[in-house]
Amino acid sequence: MVSPFKVLIGWWIMKGKLILVLGGARSGKSELAENIASRLGGAVKYIATATIQDPEMAERVKLHQGRRPASWLTFEEPTNILGVLKDGKQGDVFLLDCATLWLTNLLLAENLPRCGAATAEKQEYILGQAQAAAETIHQGHHLIIVSSEVGLGLVPDYPLSRTFRDLAGKVNQLLASKADQVYLTIAGLPLEIKSLAEQKWSD
Image (cartoon, rainbow, N blue to C red; front, top):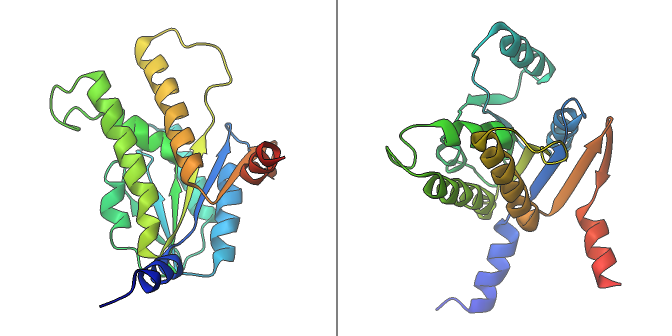
């Protein structure tokens, strides 16, 4: 019979890191996340959640693609992030860019979690997906998540926009609560804020 102590030790050895990188538009958050991914040392698997709907978005995607090393494996997946993460191995590094586009895709998908789902049901489903994604690090891989901070501006005019803003805030809070490190990027300057917050509350 395996002792609970050995099971606990094995769990800690296996667990990877969860790192959340927040910031506004063109704040440098993606570049920071890419730098962190390169430094973690494992095989990097990039999960791209953007969908190309127009030439402007195509240019944005091209810019991101041009920065990534050729050795990185890219998964273009707008909704089924868990399907990619389930194959994570010990030491792998997943970079999800970005969570806000992912939740946008989930929010607008007519068949998720089921056809005709009400807004409240969709929000519960999306929060559950974010929670499940964060917990995949127990498979042993590292997960870096890029997410936008969208709640600092004016209150949006339309109900769907307000739903998106509120949901993005809830997802960011959930991920931050699970993360080992949380970075906030402002004008290209990164600040690791979770350790600062924990230190302040422990004083």
